[in-house]
Length: 285
Length: 225
Image (cartoon, rainbow over all chains, first blue to last red; front, top):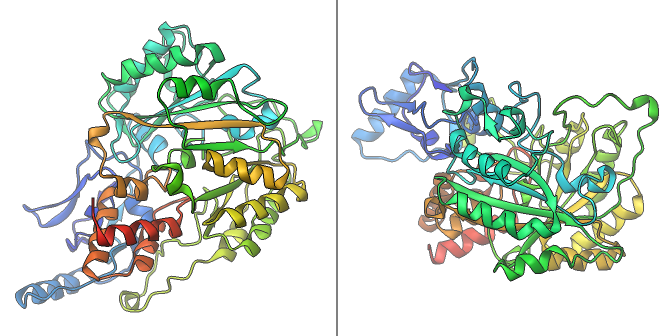
């Protein structure tokens, strides 16, 4: 993302809206500037800010007059008054940043939309997580910390070493050059993203082992980690296999996503396509 | 699963946060699902959701690309529910957010009775979702638990800011903006109701809960952590 210095009036609104805190007013030029190393190309500035199309020289003059009078103009805080943000034509590997950070972006880099798969939320029609199995989502970087892909590789290496298989449809898996070792493509390691999700599936009796492994590796990963643990309920709608394990490990289960089991397969056979690698229609929620 | 799952707070703080969403699945039930998704949201409206949305077009409050300068003094802050429903044109997850359990469970029952054939999920406190299922006569199929945030948690902001920023599961609501809004509410420069509209516009899929955010801002007005 770039800010056009000919348009920017240094109002400062954008410095607050960047989730990574990567926009600042550069005192040398008195214009808002993007720190490219820290920018994850999430486009929150470009899409989130409403835009006016005011004349920049006039706005600058008005702002100077106001400053001389020590008056404070009180503009709307979610507006760029001169529409100064200009997206770049992102090239590989930087385009990976946007693919994982901008929820509106299609994954040109991976061919997948969103950061993850449908997981258990369509489990009633996909049967992805069966009785006795646990699906893990291991999310890195959110909220507002971000993560270097090199750091996530530490986790995927450890998981692969433990014999865990990665979810094939997950966009992060598609960045791996070797899924058996959890090794990422060399050219994406120095890219930073707002968040990324590693997905795995194991047997219920491996739940504690995986969580302990994640806890150990996350000590060496310089970002926040959020774990999601999905599983099947029994015929009475109860879940008595995984929750006790989690509670015994000290987790207080405050929040969950519940699949109501109301979905059914309605596509006709003629509509069934060959599954494309990594194809996902629904955004991760 | 992650987008609405990892909201910060304890079960009590989710008392005004019930998210119900319908999801078509690729190759299983996505064909001709757009009318069903629209119907799902239409059915939600009588129960007065505080927000609805889809990940392609956003929620009921959206940024404007051509804002009139007059907006600095007089701006339409009204959520546009109709625009969300009319705008759905592809098979995506659609979401309805409620600020009370009664509305959420009533809607869940109506959605179940409508038998749309789409996967329907609720993201809420564990016990809150169970209560809704019991009311609607639904046997839970699967559940995904949030284990919260771990790792370098020293990099996270305070809990009031976390409650606000994690209500956009894609992380589009920045901690700096949330802090600025708390400051403005404390200074009396904006009301909590006005402040939440600014933050909600950054959430690109409509899962931001303006009612809960307003409550957090009211709390922070009196005592910032």
